[in-house]
Image (cartoon, rainbow, N blue to C red; front, side, top):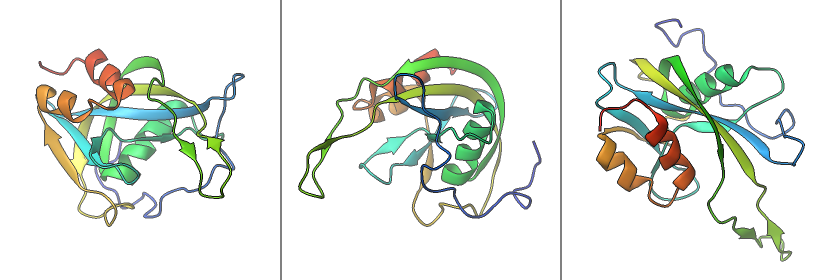
Length: 165
C-alpha cells in the first residue's frame, strides 16, 4: 500500500445501500487486528456507539473485496495504512443484540458475521476521515483483551492473531 493517505478519500462511506449480507441475513463486517511491526502492540480506536475501545471494522460493501473493506475501515476509523498479513477467519457475533426503541417499536439489531485480518501498521496519518469522532491508542495484548471484555467476537479476533502475549 501507498505510504501516504493523500490518494485516499477524506470522507467515510455511510449508509447500507451497498452493504453485503449472507443467505442467513447477517450483515457481513470486515475488520483488522492492526499490529506494530514487532507484534507487541495492537492499535485500537474509541467506539462511537459504545464507550470503550474496539478494533477497526465496518460493513463489507458490494464494490470491494473483503480485504479492501478491512483496509478501508482501518483508514476511515483509525487513520492507518496497513498491509494485510493473515486471514483470521469468520467470527460469529455473540454479543447480545440490543433492541432499538427509538420509534416506539421494538426492533432487533441485525446480526453480523465478522471477517478479521491480521495487519501490520505501516503508517499512522495525521489527518483521517473520522479523526474528529475517534481517538486511537496502542495496547499490549493483556490491555487490549481486557478492553474488549464486552465484545467476545473482537476478543476472538485478537486471540487468533500472532500478537505477542
